[in-house]
Length: 145
Ligand code: RB5
Image (tube, rainbow, N blue to C red; front, side, top):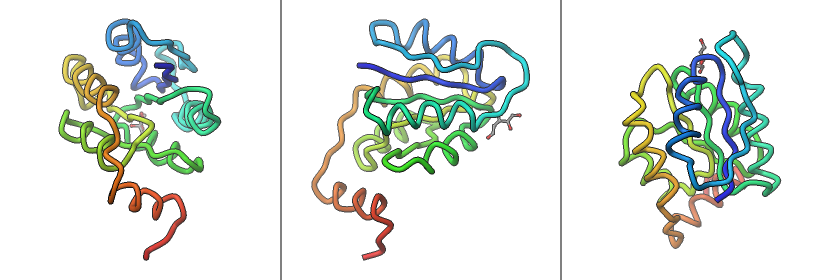
């Protein structure tokens, strides 16, 4: 799988762990950041989201302090469904029910072991489709009925 990965300073060290351990065997596009210096999370959210929306990668992974800002920014890009996940259950549901294509993690919330498990589940779970596909279309089209 081709996966784009990005982080701000608060997610940098977890991003490095995810790339070296969780994404070994996958093709990784690392959009930065490349150090601990303070930086702005929307920069990386939009880089990863654009790659996902353009179909240049299969999935995106974003890490900031909480995952929240990354998810807010990435989900503004049409076709991107970014989900903050703090458990394996959330990761499974984000894929199976919401067809999430960007996983957002909190480097100040999760330990590396938890984050690696969440990533593993996210990448290995498929979308269930069916009634969930109709609901995802409602999101994409901004419809309430
Ligand atoms: C950076 O201090 C922090 O605000 C950022 O990493 C993120 O948690 C925002 O959602």
